Length: 401
Ligand code: SF4
Image: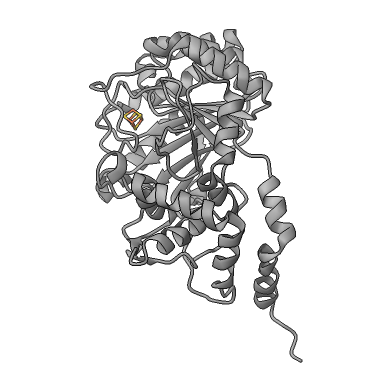
């Protein structure tokens, strides 16, 4: 018998995800240990690509007492990390909350996602970095600073120069590439994008050091990636440019979609990988409502409880007991889609990636509820086994679900 090729061997071995031991291990994996804190929906910008529909016209900011209670419980439950997102943390309105989060950063790895408006002046940027540092969030030791570059129409380039210089002033000896990342979300046409990327390159060169042209490469989703090498040495600072096509805000937003990716019917069998990440995230709304998130999209079916009235541990157990969540944890988007097609036989989802499927299933409360009931009745593991029976691991055509 001919020896199987490496690819065939790999496909054969992928079949282990059908084994009961794998299913048990996956269900027993730690979950819900990454916390996201909503910093809006009131925000100092109104970006055309905002996938959570924040803006100056929206009402709602996180409350200090609720945040402290939540973080305290998160620490007791040994959650791993907290991310400040969905709104702008570094503004006066959220200062007390950011101070509290900084104080907990010894226990929870803290990521601050900012749009950079706070760096309208060098002094203000320094003030913010010193404030977080004094309160306990020392980026040179732990944590991450993600700067979202939406569009030059909203945040002037000099803000990023101020931000970089302020970081260098507050953390002169740090390895900046260890904690700083810039993410650029394309919402303009290609020419304007290219211009912005080059202009940002100049900002980096002027502040940190050199931009190596040879390192203008591709990120994990084939997005342009520039590595900036600080003059004084250390790790490179990454500037990732996500090639999105803007189709609007919130539910209409198409995350990380490239024009070149063709629209097509996505099938539940289009499983690509053994992804063990599902079910890691919990999102806390500004009002204390808790739901689970996933790594691709955030939705707000806040049916699990509010941290003001319930202990976080009770809410997390409610999520874990929900068959919709269990299905997601075990079989990801594919399993939810498979269940959705059982309850809605004609359901066809046309899109480019798994997030398009989630958008339909989680975005429509009726479908989500039917899926939940189906999984409850049929059993999550049974449904998973049914889906697995339909998958031919040797198939070549697959999409990233
Ligand atoms: S994308 Fe970020 S900065 Fe822009 S409106 Fe939404 S939350 Fe605010």
